[in-house]
Amino acid sequence: MAEITIRSVTSMDEWLSLSSDWSNLLAESNSSTLFLTWEWLYSWSEVCLGRDRQLYILAFYEKSSLVGVAPFYLQKRKSGLFPVREIRFLGTPESGSDYLDIVAKKGHEYEIANALYDYLQGEGRSGWDQLHLTDMRSESLFLLHFMNRLDEEGRYAELKRSAYCPGVQLPNSEDGFDSILSSSWRKTFRRVERVSNRDYAVSYVVFAGAEVAAELETFFQLYEEKTGHAREPIYSIMQKMLEKSAEQMPFQIDNLLLDGKLVASLLSFKYGQTFSTYLIVVDKQFNPRLSLGGLLYGYNIKNAISSAFEYYDFLKGDERYKFHWSNTGRCTLSLDIWQKSAAGYSLALAKLTRLIGKVVLR
Picture 1: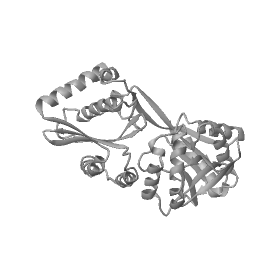
Picture 2: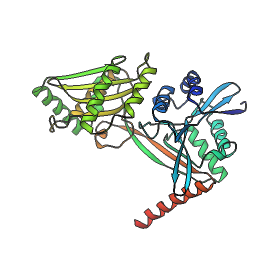
Picture 3: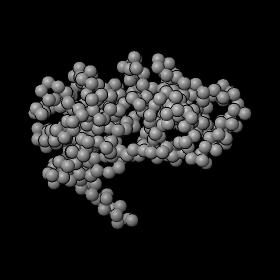
Picture 4: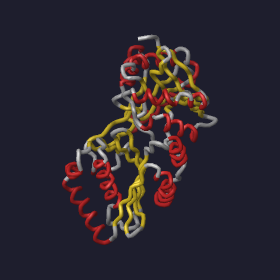
């Protein structure tokens, strides 16, 4: 292969000019997820970057062809006596992005991993103190090659589990819906469905495509009212992404109404053959004896099956209710590397001290 060259992208305008190449590269990679799309990460950056966060994208080229991108930003913060410059993935920590990665054209993962290592330890060495990458795909080929290079160089790095994402391998038709449920949960779901239809007028309404933009406000009103959590920055990120995805809306909102009252709402993503649930809000006071969230998930999964999706992803979080449905799952990992600098040594020492403290206390 030709030599890999690296271009540093530090302005939003410069990144905007890469949008088409970015999308083409993602489609040709093993890392293609919604959370790595240009639309998602650019929208996140418009909302979440600021004075202490600077764009730090590294674009990898083979001749004039884009073959890799490292979607980074540089976080500046204080740790003890030292100012710290921390490299992080765009999309984190706000918004709960999953399955992040260095995007590499298929077959170029080894070259990109080595080029990034050489850059961080060479030309870019003076620009950072800690590399802190979270929610990386555990099956990432880039990560495999990057960790091998770290081992070869004798560099210390900490790799640990970041999150678990339960999921469901979907059947080919709705006839297989019962097969994904345990016998006990199947009985519970059928009881909730039967009682709900007996006592209320049940409506299940799906908003997709251009309809989502108008329904988003209603969803987040209910979200704030019933969860007590603020809608920002997620609401603004999604609004900006919808502006960029007018032709292919990736979102879906499912509403469950009983006697005309909105009692549960689910915000989901659609990408490729994967259907992912992102946020759910339930009015738990309406009827505490009924699992209205469970009922809405059931209808939503049936909808995903009928729409020919192959995988249903609950994304990060090991909440117990997700395991009523899931029959598989994926792990994400976090990686920490400390630079050989005063701030880097300080961070590594603090980390080691906390680890020793945990061992002693146990």
